[in-house]
Image (cartoon, one colour):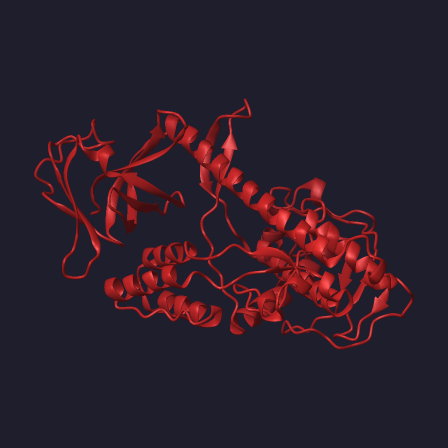
Length: 436
């Protein structure tokens, strides 16, 4: 299926009419959007890196011969299309997409982007050789903007034509108690007010923090903390919930669905079948009832959560294997939470948040964990027993360099990252001392 619409250069939707009204390939009355089955004949298969090179004008600037380093021969256009034509289209789409993105955030969309690690494997295809954050480029954002809009427009079609059977993806507001904890800590630690009234005020607060704070690490840590109380987005059948519960909190829109990836998501397959039923005017004869669609949606939610946990666990296993061969003896960590016997540390260089156990530090430190009587907050104070600290055994003695470390939320720490030798395999993060 394709969803086709016209756009203005400012990122808004155009209003000009498009095509006829044959059955199965219809206009809608909403903004003249066209939905229908199509066959796409690609003239060039671009990857994100090549598209980014085109956007950055590293290639296709009228030169007689294209540098294959920036635009590989296998990804260059065929079928009579030229390099300059394809490059012009990519740059035009990028310009419109960035205008659309600006418009989305002005209208209250929220972006909480964590760090995603990418691994390069050895020749055996199993052992991680390199580990680095996966880059998010403008070419990624280009695709994202048109994908989000297509999903929104298809959701609109399903609601108006499939009614209660419409398979939507909602996103409930975050857990209030968890959000309030982040608000309180930010006020106490940085004297910064975060407004969590809705996604718009939250995004405005983060944008203001980015402008006013000179320490990018603070913005990163606050963003990481805000991700914890966020609820997961879920699939639903529209008729099983009140209309107010269709909304998508992060995107700040009243409804949304998944339409763009039927090759890897079953909900998209149901959406495509529903869309066809609306075009054929056969919704009442659709093979699934509203309740059956909702039941399938709930099952998809369970499977998606299981897949997400499996992916996260896989990432931890690969990171553990990488650290087994390449231990990190010293890097920055930031405390994001303090419990009775554990504390949570965020390692920005790895995009990793993990719990550290006090008992694993007993050999190196004298530890005093307690609740502050003044404010009721948990605190941990550690003092080195000897000059030997974890991960620094072969380094010069640190004896006398620090006497005591008070660990509270947003305390910067020097940590060592290694592979836990006991099963199950995992990353072990241990405190070395205060961050200098």
